[in-house]
Image 1 (cartoon, rainbow, N blue to C red):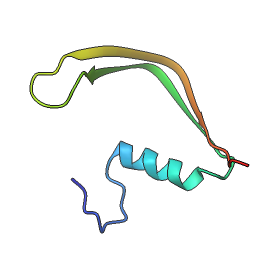
Image 2 (image 1 turned 90 degrees about the vertical axis):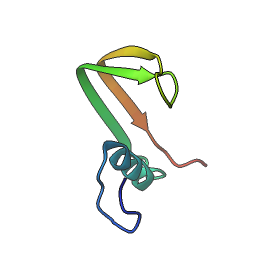
Image 3 (image 1 turned 120 degrees about the vertical axis):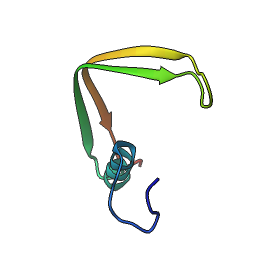
Image 4 (image 1 turned 135 degrees about the vertical axis):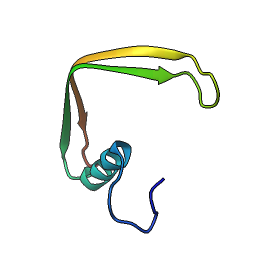
Length: 68
């Protein structure tokens, strides 16, 4: 776990959240490109979860814009 007083990003989720927070409201666009990315997604936290196998091959676009 990272030090809450540290300004250094140590995980991919922290990086994504920080980038999204910084760009929200600035008409920014974040584009992620994946080539044959495979992820096993757990059904729950804790011991012995079942997993769904996801395969992503393409582009995921997240757009942010300021609300009027």
